[in-house]
Image 1 (cartoon, rainbow, N blue to C red):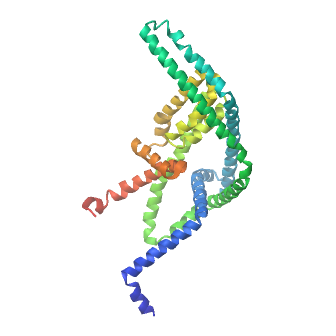
Image 2: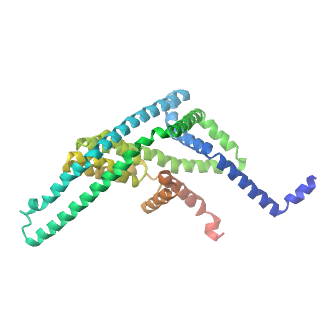
Image 3: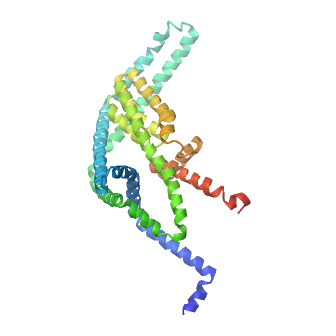
Length: 366
């Protein structure tokens, strides 16, 4: 029987068929347990990001268990502050929606008075005709914007009544989040041993390559993620302080939003500036202009100071590659895809530059 099985297994079609069957069964297993693996990946990512901080505490003879507890305390403090700030922004925007037509009407009046203000510098009839036409166009644009924005905010805020009907879904999400927190704690407590066990599961001849890939992955992806978190924090502080100086309401909360959404390169500025401009409307024209200046300054500081010094050469990606990666990631997986696109592309570049380009396949042809 054993000899017969050996002869059957010698057939390449049988081996290919068994391989395809195994891949199909593995796919079905992953499909049925997607939530479990996604939760584990989230927990492992959180433990991975916290590992340098825990190792830093261990250098000062702080036990790993206390380091894990410190991470949890800091995280829940951050979560509580984030909840309070976001709740205040939602309240302010809900109150603003009722006052928005009044605020925009004042800008309409100012635009209508624009030719009178400029008449001393532009008395020519041709210039006056151009100004009158421009004023009418701007007034129509602002009125259309006002009507559209009020309707959009009304629909958005009107969905608040559906929160009660979704309590069951929220409860399920909270249970899953609690499980992720528990698994993260176990992973942080035994992170070095877990990595060693994962390495030992591979064939021994693969260990050097796996360790080399892990080191390159940590440099390209881990360095980028941790650096981007620090850059986002600095951008959030810059925006919060700047908006406070120009007297925009809820400056701290808006700075927090700017920092969080800055984790998505390029798209974050567009997302975070919308609530800022809406809240700045109540302060008048100069407050609105000041808010725009704050975002321009923060964007320039990020591009020319924060990112070059903090991220350094962690990714070494061309800006065009970064933009295309974000667009592709957003199209494939939404916000999460846009956030993960750049680090994944950085690791793909490491594989391309360090393994494919020096290979015989590239030098001599496959």
